[in-house]
Length: 337
Length: 220
Image 1: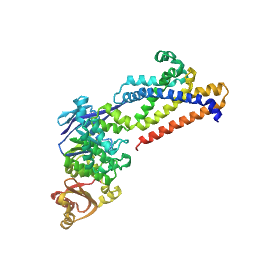
Image 2 (image 1 turned 60 degrees about the vertical axis):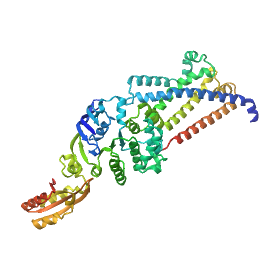
Image 3 (image 1 turned 180 degrees about the vertical axis):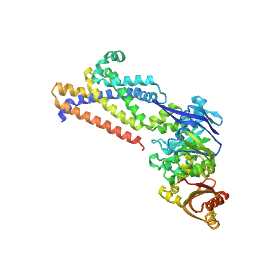
Image 4 (image 1 turned 120 degrees about the vertical axis):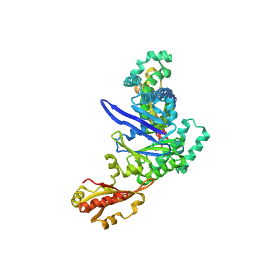
């Protein structure tokens, strides 16, 4: 559906050149939700803007349904763009137009027949739950409602793909949840492929099927959310996955604990999260586990539990306990002290 | 009061009418020139939709040059051109061209700054939907800037009213001329005061109308 091939983008300001994207390739399948996560400055915004050529790649190909957008003439590009909806962090609505007009105007400007405009506006405002607000101006709406209008505007074009550029980053957690729900529904019920970028791990966890991690202009890791989440490979990915406030143990505490035993993190998927492993190892081996932090994250398709524990005991016993855990499909990792 | 009005009423209304005419006609022509010119400046500037360094630099320089010349000098400087274009250099007809030359670049500047204020993100959103550039300019940029445009035009109108006072020098009449000819040269200070009051009222009315209009267009 979407394929980026060796996309490179360099920005030149004066004498300075910045390589925002370094040879990035990725494939997004029809009907999936693909998320790219990265800290600010990682190049993810440039990446998504290259997907509909708001930013023209310096090198590489951008294929949408096999058509290379970089090779198209202006008019053809406009037609292709019509099939790609986009939503933004700051909504980007017309301030001088009502909710209805905000959805209707792009349709008018794309020469959609009049009666159809009315039908589409009504339909999509209903989907986003704002049919009551159609005569209101954006200034009177909350952030979440504005994003809903923007989503309705994008959907009204009846695109095959929806690009989301940090669409929930300016919203509070509750509103973020409701917007994510909406995006999930859009994906499931309308079958629209979604490509999103975010710096919030939560967004990836909750709605994405696959994830890519960007770091300094490169796509450093890619895979299904559950794989990347439970077995992060690249240091940058680990940073994201373990960035949960719960798992930040103060260095002073860590130092004291590592003197008396080992600090390890346990990651378990799905049903195994409810079994009493710690009780089992305490009984079986000469070890004393104590819990430092823990939690269960709900991913789109599965739940993932994480536990940070301190394991006290003879080295041999601790080793045995660890292998016992590993045999039960728990990912065990030593936390660097 | 009544006596004053019988003596001067006709002159004042005549002068007021001339001032309105000398403001309205050049204003209309200046908008027709200034608005597209402002749009072109925005489009051709660096990073614009139709970036064109040569056009932008030339237009920019010409506007700056014209805007540096005081109207009274412009009025005389343009006499040969005015004669060709209007066929006369006196009366209301003789003053329209200089007033347009004076006002159009000013309006272009005001339009430019109004259009530049429009949120780039909105423009980008429309670009991402594949809307043609010309439609974006008209239906998004100009539309979003409407309120600021009206305020700019109000400022331009008031500047224009001020400039018409000098039109008396080429016999175009108007309120400024009346105040100068009678009030100053013929020692009729009351006429000057009354004219000043009429001008104050005129400017106040224009500004108030402009503000109300702009506020109604503003929805944020």
